[in-house]
Image (cartoon, rainbow, N blue to C red; front, side, top):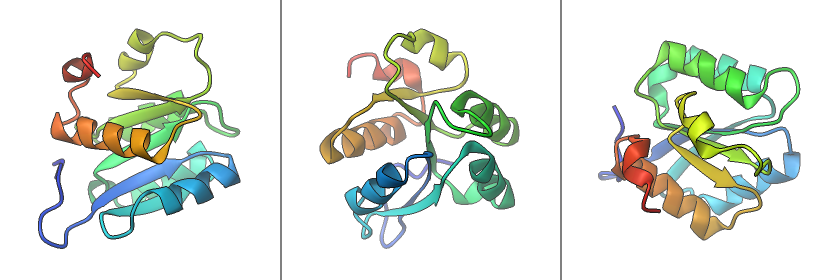
Length: 140
């Protein structure tokens, strides 16, 4: 179940997967610890292992598209096979690909690299507010 906005001291738990160490470090500082709990993974395979160990602990997955060992599409297939209700944001610098194609994989929103803290937080909140329904995000 997606919590959306935090209630009380409950934090939104995000699994963030990217092979770029600088991006992992930046996101850890971008997402305010008082509001978010961020678990990071340096590749898709590590992300699936972390997710599989406790799938209902996560409220959202943000994953890069191009990664070694297991790409974003494969990671999305693995996690959505476990939890079909899980909201997913796909982060990519590959703008040639159409957002509609990503939605067929179960992606709720596309985040183009590079992005700012404000863009990241706004998109997270939009996805959670809409319960992971990507069709409701067409006006973003």
